[in-house]
Image (tube, rainbow, N blue to C red; front, side, top):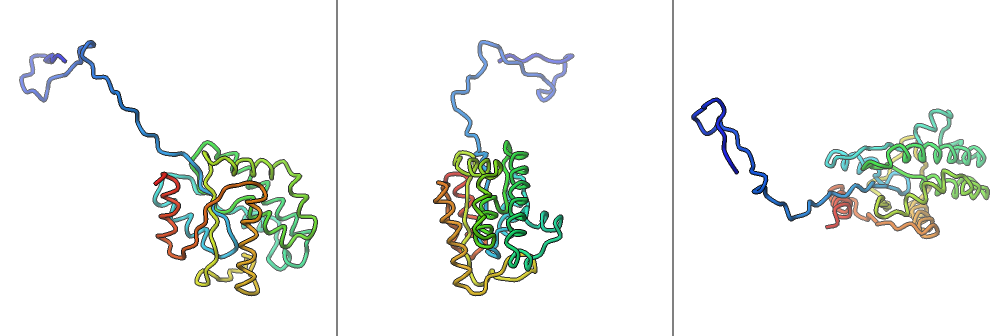
Length: 223
């Protein structure tokens, strides 16, 4: 490279450096691009999905997408009792949740996002509380769009968080199980749905929040 002085300035710090074109360095190494995958957290009620999603958001540069169920339930003025006792309303609720979820996923499909629940959560609840008509949700284009997204392992990492007694609590919104075994059984229904629709997933079976984060982080960065 060559140095040229600006207006006769003497200190070296005040000089400008210009690369001679013939002597410009050639970078022969490829830059490693950080993965731009989205994180999808699913599972039964009260397993710590929201807590984990907020922790992940605080540590990586990603968009946090809150659960759609709370928004839709407020819009439709529904509560847990209605969902349990009225299969038709329960089914309509899950359909609305899937539509909103699909809309959000479409909006952020080109960004690294953390999804606190997914369309699979709505399907699991519909199958458990919506009666025999739950399969009608599979005819919705939004449902199929979401399923196709979750199958794309190069873009989405799906995690099922398993139940632990210390996580269980009733906030008046989440659907509550009558027993620990019922809770575990409901959790297993998520695995069945994932397997049925050929969606690969990872299990988070540790109650410690730091260990949970570590599982997600290692999967995200291929460690």
